[in-house]
Image 1 (cartoon, one colour):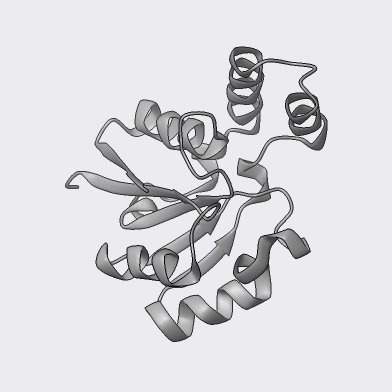
Image 2 (cartoon, helix red, strand yellow):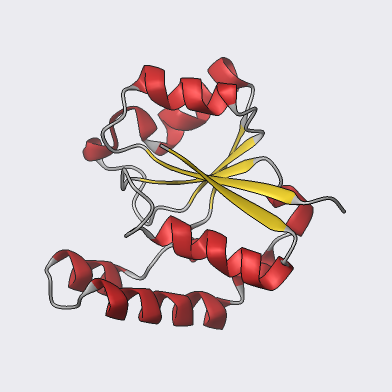
Length: 148
């Protein structure tokens, strides 16, 4: 198989126009929601059911929610409350996704032209980057593209 292109994007600090334009411009075939909580009022236009509808109607794009690719509530709360720093969060999260064997739960070809979604505007301190890098280590033939 050719190189897999896996995209990531955070909806934070993006208008709906910018968000859906990035998906369209990059021909994203499937959006994989890796948020633990995707029904919060804070999610705005990216609330689960609304997002699935918009993706289909605007982008002709599939939607999939993968909470098993998200951190545990305890880990996320620890980081948000500054009880743990980013390096500790990163180490613990990578251990969690290894234990969950997330690469065993997906057909690698289904990642091609897919986009991992989270809320953080930038990938540097977001678990979507860690998920993408985990798949790259497992599969090898994967290019990660962060949409900003």
